[in-house]
Image 1: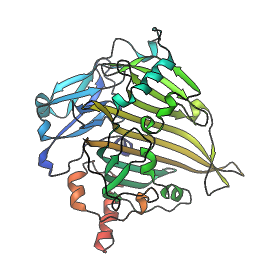
Image 2: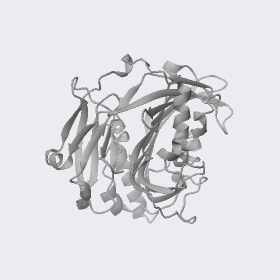
Image 3: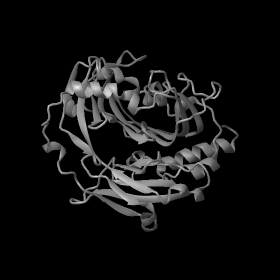
Image 4: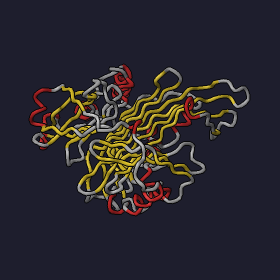
Length: 401
């Protein structure tokens, strides 16, 4: 299994002893073509427990034993939902799950009804209070961040985090508590260090369109209705939304029945969409040319409201000298926040333990708890994982935390 594969896995991690969890592994494919289906959603029906299939169509899901008699739910855009009793499935892992295509394909569908883009977006805005939590809630989850400079992986960071939100009524920033943290030793590079001075976790969470850009449902510059499709058995409208000042449009997947936005995307590729560039703070002789941005924020219904279930970002930019136009550094980052639990009656996070937006995870000081990670982190070791563990345990041996 490659490092890239591991990056793309969204996993549920045990918070207690491993015996309290059941592990289900498998892959998801098209029932007719046998083609593997990356980014399909695998979840326990009616619960916040779930994961996202990786780039090779594979997944690992760690299920609390209390759900062992519940139903596994697998969905993907353009395919029918697959529902399977877990009691029948757990004894045959690893498994192959085949999804049947819906009665139409995305590329073949044309818009046939009379509802306008403006009406769809207005109804989505009007239904925000019904569809999303406007009251306080908290999420627990796993955050993973990997940085790459040119051809070398230079930083791996993983954290168990708790997020407290006042709800979607305002744009007030969530309060975050880092419960456990492990990371590789700092890699020194003039521009990589620029990224490490920013709180990338806060930046990642702030790219939730529904929470932070919802007013753009009414105040856009251009909106285009694309071909309708489905996510699982749920028909959705697909809207491309653009606003002056945005580098790339937002693509919204909006349920046709209750107008809930269940996925928000940004999908930019310089080779396809044209050249973009921006200045680099603190480096006036360097210009950044984004090559790729893939952002996916998926929402899942839980007890009548939609919560983020998986937050994934893949970003690559080419730094060039402003004077010579020569390449300086090809920088890449992959971030993922996979939600493992939802609390609708949360306890606020105390100010003294909350992560400050000016405090980066790279510089955060927490003791490395090797026993915790032995139970919690179930990602299969890679060369980079081993380096991180060796880095941290070497610090422990010399008394540095």
